[in-house]
Length: 259
Image 1 (cartoon, helix red, strand yellow):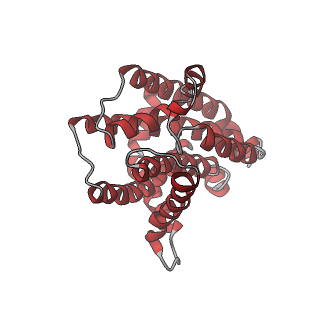
Image 2 (image 1 turned 120 degrees about the vertical axis):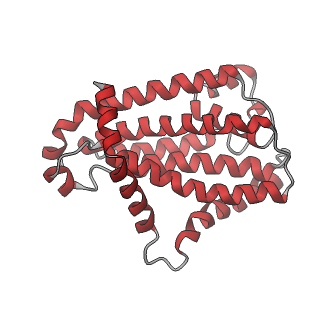
């Protein structure tokens, strides 16, 4: 069943890309700064958080600008993709009601659009890496795998949210609160070492925390990814994708009548 659906999605790959790119261009249509907004937003956030946490709260971390920036980019992708994915079904009622093709195409294209925006942000991050002369090692090869895990986790969450949001519109408000809390509970602004060992284990139950820590270690600090972290991220991504797909597929037949 799942493999048959994957084959069907593959046949729609051109449509998925067209939807993703169209949504990306539409986001900045009639904007004076255009695509530059995708760079300006994380840079402004970086500036504010860097001033607060490096000066006022005296957090001392090597390459703290990059430490903070990569966390903002990765969390920003999760936030952007899940929020746009959540509205991907309810935001297209006419298409959902009148035309049949796999509805999860909308969710996938929303996640790809968010990925495109994060790629633009990453170009600035790379320039920061060059400016600060951060050494690069072979351990950078772990980064694509880590980012694939993040995309799969995000897609699984987005599938579940998009389906649940059709029937329960309160989901959007609950998710906003959850993301705000999650931002501060995830080691984006600080290192996990500030917590005692027993609390660190609790924080690391969040796969996004492991993804951000592992991305920093491999990209900024040239350290190899830990095998137990990679295994945890892999299992988490598979479980969340399966759960998201099950929720979506169970609720999909009633989308048209509910919208």
